[in-house]
Length: 462
Image (cartoon, rainbow, N blue to C red; front, side, top):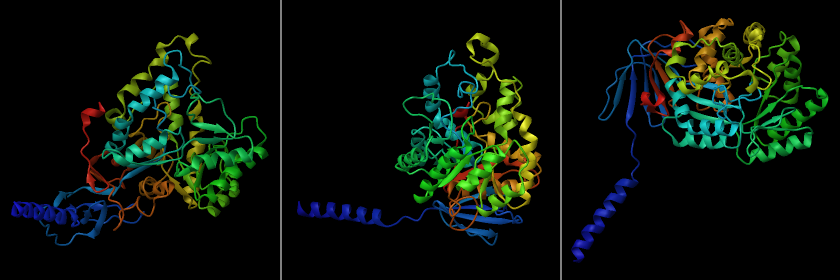
């Protein structure tokens, strides 16, 4: 009996010892690709990338590779590897459908805002998959309810999801009453002390950013500046970076003076001046493009939507189907009516400002503002990149904006955004050269996130 017990004990001990020995993850070798590392330099032809576990073990010109047992070799001959794309401006509490912003067009007579939010939350797992399918391995939620922190947690536990950074509820200098009374997306701060209190409360959830909505409205701009400055100071004191929505030149300059680290929208009312450029340089600010969002609103409001190929393939079909609701709804059920499609009138000013800022060395980051009406979660970033091309940026610069600079918006440039030894293995293998044409970022062969080759069930996206 004791011999049997001893044998059993030794077996258990052996299993325990084996389990305790660190297991070396298998190697993944991407062989023969052209490597575009996201730093803006020349591409490396006939390269190789070795991935072990979550990180890049080796990267460089191809030598003689002798893979051992269990090694996965991906033949990337004729293909191009870029860092995973990063959308630096999205909103998960907004679905992109026509019901998602009652402050823009009010269809609550057709679908209540509570029902809209419930529907949006239920679709989050598939929404996250749409980003990966689109080659987007990281996103920044630039402001939303407290439950958006749960989206960050969900993404962290889910294989088929991008990395998610979160700002939490916005701090606004003016605004309408929140549509959700229990968990609003924004809080209005009329005094500096209120702004500080809101930052302190939000800090309990460990946000990646503080988002401030600097909207003039009819308020005293000096008082509003004091609110913004107080929120920025409190955030910086707690080690939290500050992202500010300020689309007018005057408020954008004040945002920089108040301590903005990131401007989340293009300046759209006037051409930027020397003072703005000097302020932006002195703060080494990140300037997020967000060119697409006005186009999305205008196309839906004008019932003239033009989807790109990747939007047709990977956009949420149920979201897209709602856009025709405007034509079906009687006018007396839309308080205030449907706004005229004139938001895109500012696009040329945005284009001109982007050219000026990029040419003077301001760090530009790509962000689509996905979730707003007409701007689809996932594939929208590709239309954003196309608009950056239309604005005069070169494809190589655009790629840096959508990788390295967008990683800086996340605060993760040490780990993400470029293809370098030791960084996380987040990358996209493309069938065509994105430097020749940025629209080739849509020609996706494989997506790798955290060292895992993604297998996305395409039927789930239908």
